[in-house]
Amino acid sequence: MNSGKIVFTGCALFDGYDLYPALDNVVVVEGAKVIEVCTGGYPDKKGEQVIDLQGKTLMPGLIDAHFHCNSPSLDVGSIDGLFPSHLAQHARAYLEETLSRGFTTVRDAGGADSGLVDATEAGIIKGPRLFISGKALSQTGGHGDMRKPAPFDVCGCSYKGALSKVVDGADSVRRAVRNELHNGAHQIKIFVSGGVLSPTDPIWMNQFTDGEILAAVEEAASRRTYVMAHAHTAEAAMRCSRLGVRSIEHGTMIDALSAAAVAENETFVVPTLTVVEALISGNVDLPAGAYDKLAAVSDYAYAAVEHCEQAGVKLGLGTDLFGGLHGQELWELVLRARISGALETLRSATSVNGELLQRKDKLGVVKPGALADLIVVDGNPIQNVELFLEPAKNIQLIMKNGDIEKDITSETKPHAGQGV
Image 1 (tube, one colour):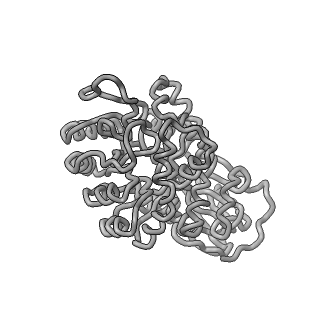
Image 2: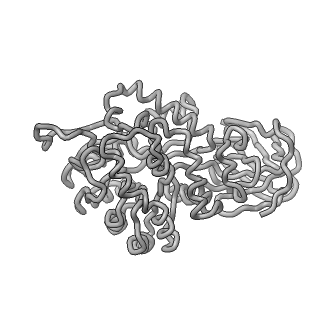
Image 3: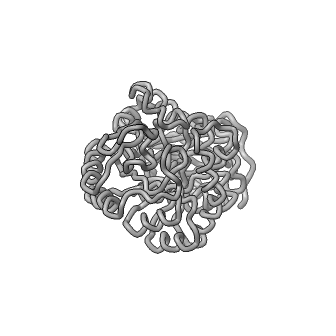
């Protein structure tokens, strides 16, 4: 870890909330934290590393609040057949590539374990800061139950796959939540509606009873953490919000009425637009039945974001990519910006996601006391969010936890002055 001071000068600043376009911003990092943010000159001091950013934009590292480490195939059931050591190599590649695209934090939505967290914190994996859910929890026949229909009764037969496991009944849910938290989960993931890639559940299907959902929420709260819930339908979103779930994932079919209820309860929603666009393109092979399910949600996804914005819902940002779709993470910024504008989209990917992860003022912001997870963009991403689509060129510096993981700022010419 960096033990000295690093001083960034001559930059525009997006602090996770607002853009400060004047090129006299100064950000000082010491160890793993930001210790000072100011304007004007900063006197050189012996032993300090000064990096003149020459008009580029300094901002918090991006946060992906719906990531999957264990995700080498869109045929999710097939992943269950991989040995954990094999799967871990896929996870390592996805994590390291994701850091190179400017994501300094990701929240895994089911499957990643504490071994990946430990390997990342030890520097064995050069990846983002990682928050894990352990195994996501599904009822029998729910979205996380990847067993195909079989000529025998599955009732009473346990299922534990690479990403999820089946639990039925409030007591079983409590036991499973306690076990995942015991094994290092930072938050708990459950499935409350049907999904696209699972083999047996229709999108409209309500999953888990209120008692089962409450059991998960109560057990998570006992460890001062929370539940995130896969929920496509408006009804599922309203149930989650009413029962104390903190984070609704996808929310693809949220309407005006459910958005108002979600906003009233201060529940977060994490849309995932890129995966919808990629799947409906027809360029991706999907499991049988998935196209019909996808059609049921794809027409609503953008309208759901608009409903949430109009109601004042706190919108995070996630990607939910599997298999060959990895590498398209930064398209999420572009697609969201077409609805929300670049400023609101970047707030979602930084300060809002930091708050969602219960790390308000620590992650997703540039302010004294925040963790030094920073990136430098060659240009003004508020004016042109598509700069992110060329990360190798335009994301010129990546710092995680005070350590510089990439720096090509000195290899480019000074950037022209910026205005809003």
